[in-house]
Amino acid sequence: MIIDHDLDFLKDAVALVDANLDRLEKRISTHRDPTMFGFFDQVEYITGLGFIACQTYATAKRSQRTLLKEEALSIGPKHRTGLPMIALVNAAANYWKQSLEWSLDAPKKPSQRTVDVISDLGVDPKSPYPITNMLREVLAPHPARFENLIPYLIQWRDGLSD
Image (cartoon, rainbow, N blue to C red; front, side):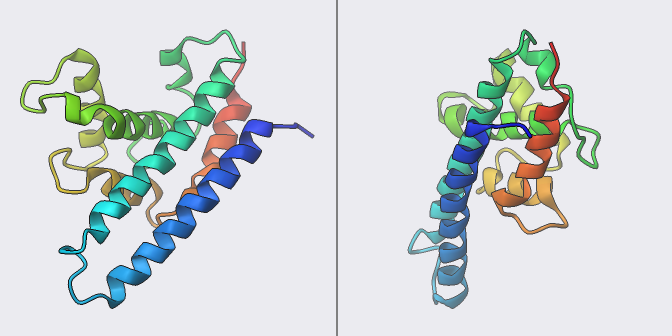
């Protein structure tokens, strides 16, 4: 049995994120004007934190190997679009962290790669809630909760080699 303390930390982090998503989803469904009160913005923010937690896990696992980042992002389970799940996680996290620094009308090369991955997933990076939409698209038809992403990250981890 593999001892993976990073995975334990990730599971704790995504449990917090998912609990907040559940709480916000309930508020959205019962509130008369969830947009005005910023509930959708809160969901976007919390979802971004979930992707950051997953990216941090992936970085920790990759740092234990001699793989280059691009190689590590090309392996593991694939999404129905054919894109590696880990590349989708990485793009979502990068977009959430850095998109406000970019001009989406003329992105630089690293940001253009991120925008391309998001677009290839079928999400408009200029839409109001691209990170929330990414989580839904990445996990469909499963519920958009990070606990459902963990098995893919485990498969990716298990496929890493030196």
